[in-house]
Image 1 (cartoon, rainbow, N blue to C red):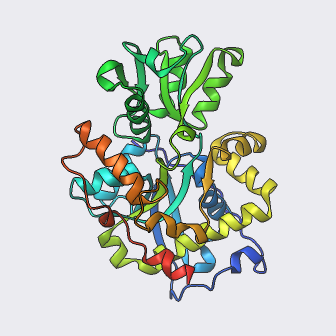
Image 2 (tube, rainbow, N blue to C red):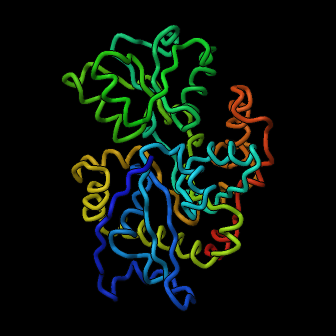
Image 3 (cartoon, rainbow, N blue to C red):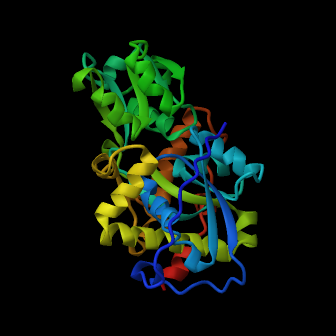
Length: 333
């Protein structure tokens, strides 16, 4: 079900400025958090923080557990196999609508082209998907992006031949010629586009065409939030330190992130362009009620309607129940 990857950790000098951006938390012994994640360029600040032990100055030990299928992370959280997870906001909306007490504590990044629908070169538009096989992972960001794209073009999943497939399985299926259309995310998108000499496949629709709708978020259950507030605050501080390091040392950061993505530093930079990491000063926008898609209320209204129309949730939830802004608000002050 999951793929665990051991990320080598390197101690950095005590005087490294980025590690002292925030005062260490008053934690007597290092707390631990087991976090579910996937290989995704937008999670770069966490990968950097993990590699350079940037959580440690805040009294925290983070165990990143890598999943091939992001749809499995909420279930692992529910069983307490994980303390928390890096998910997309549509997953949280679905969980809360079904009665789970999962709460976003921090927005991580907005997908900015990193999620995409890729098709054979002969396919000109989404209208051409009708009757064709389309591979995607149900109840995942890929499913959501596809549903939104189809809706925007007067179609629904009833108009296509849906094929259940993990995001990582899409490139191989398309290379074999058995799948004309696939929905996935980086680094799979770049892999598909490079196949067949680089002119066999193309992006038909991406998260750039739906700005703000696919937001990656750090999520914990209410019970974990009540039990480990200091650890959660420390994890957010580690993210901020990782983001600061990326800005101060872009080349070194690209190498670290590239190792996790399984690509060169140059390719990592290209993939990172598909996501926008959110700085602390901008996080408040996500929690502020607004019709804007950068707000969980604005994007949530669109997400929930699609999920309800597709029968994936029984009712539209109260979006204020999908997040807990206490940690980012405290750090912003």
